[in-house]
Image 1 (cartoon, rainbow, N blue to C red):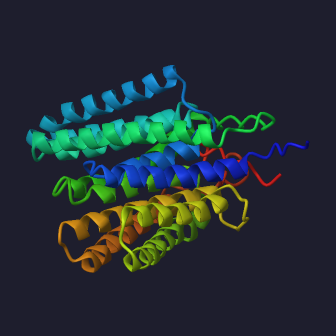
Image 2: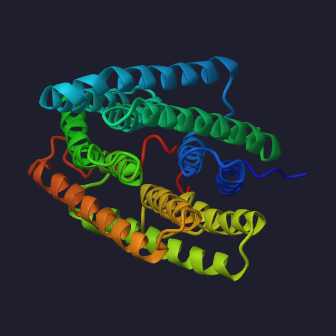
Length: 354
């Protein structure tokens, strides 16, 4: 019998099913900051085409502990010496982004950035809040790793599938410029989160997603890709919320997330080709998960969901426009490579149509 070596179908299934499982588990178990688990799940499932080995899983957990330790150590500095603390956070973000662009593990650098910003911001207000964020990151990462392993058991990679291409290693000058650009994208959201860490957690997650995307987006297409993916993610979140309102239950939450995740995953892996690169659809899915997860939490807390969504969407658009501005300002007029920056996210490992 003929075996199709094209792995994109199974990868799309893993992203869709894994995102839905992370969402159902995190909200079903009422984990702290439940949107963290599906966001980490999306990043993990889109970046890993093989299940994590014990050694790799242990390394990921150690990196999470490292991010936790750095965030906790920076919290007193941010509280008593805010200027020095902010500059040190900016420096750590720069080196974390640069590590990924210079051939390091992009996924680990992303977890380090999330932990560094979220935990240090929470620790400036209260140690108990920092402990809550640490618990959310730890449990969210555990759920994401379990979802990755389970999805690989259900939809294993075809034995004849080609090996994913190695992530490009940028020259030192180019990597430094792009790392600086990504750090500047994240910093305003981090400064905003210092005023209300728990309230602005979604903005931090969104800015980290934009920082990742800015590393692979050319300046001439920045507004179309960054702003377009943000607006599309918001529109999908509205459609999801309206559909979920017809029959509210955890099972329907899971099924609707499965449907929306599979639609986005088909675009992500170009099973349904579009003119947008994979990073566009990855950012769209992350935006959908963040906005929807926070709206569910607002509803459970008795808040005005629609007003909160409008304010949050406005902030998302604001940080996205700022990211576009950073891409414009820090884009060299003459590129040393003589061509355009690659559109494909090196950490996503999505195969081309060929």
